[in-house]
Image (cartoon, rainbow, N blue to C red; front, side):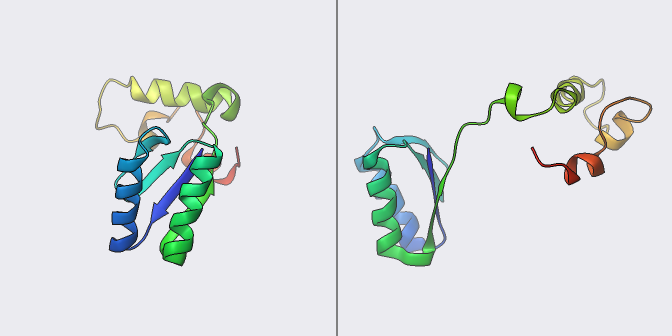
Length: 112
């Protein structure tokens, strides 16, 4: 997929117009950004916006995140357990105390 992010009002308007005219290429809209299909038409639309608005449009190639191959098992387990915690107001550092779940500092320093 192609992530198109806009940084000015005119570029945002052009992105909205493009998304409205080419709904079949748009995977998802986020206001200032949109995901386009990784097709030649998606690339053409993204590059056309980039050419028209220069640095006010950023285009990045992305790929969907596969939680089973993209994240370590310990991180997946910690996320599931934290989402299922007894009290929604418990911060993660207190929740993980006395467990084997990874610390925020450890996760911050490790690349996927």
